[in-house]
Length: 214
Image (cartoon, rainbow, N blue to C red; front, side, top):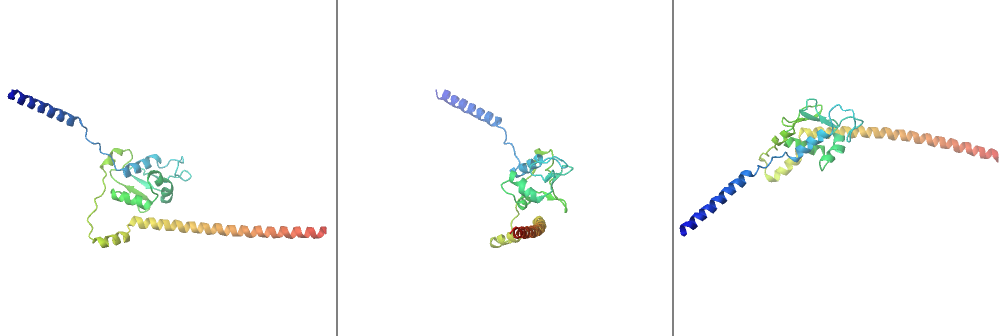
């Protein structure tokens, strides 16, 4: 009797072990997905059309592209940072900060490849190759050589080249807008003087007519 119970227990344990092995073998490995930032940036480029398209879309200015892949599809170009921040970024991200967008690109290893254009490249970020996005990883932060009480001050005072270029461009844009506003103001003042002159002439003419009638 004891022998039969022992054999029965071994049989039950064996079946449970086989079922467990079969169940674990049927489970598929977790599919690796790209970082949300990379997916959104890729969608942003795909949905804003190709360079050279003459058809205007949301976020374009008179048909001129704000952002697009480069000719080779090996990188992308932000043609108008101001309009990109105002119209495009809020559609895909929870901000409209161009500097923040560039910092995110830097953390994933993107490089600015032109001194005259806002062109960014990554060997794994290419048109028609969405499947390679999973191979792009964030840079690991290097240990800081600054004591904790100095680290915050150092980070606040550090400005990379991209940030300086952005601030310079924004400053130039503000200067240009200020000049345009000054020109418009001068035009309005000239128009105001003309209107006052016409009003004075009309009032004078009307007053003379009344005197003649009297």
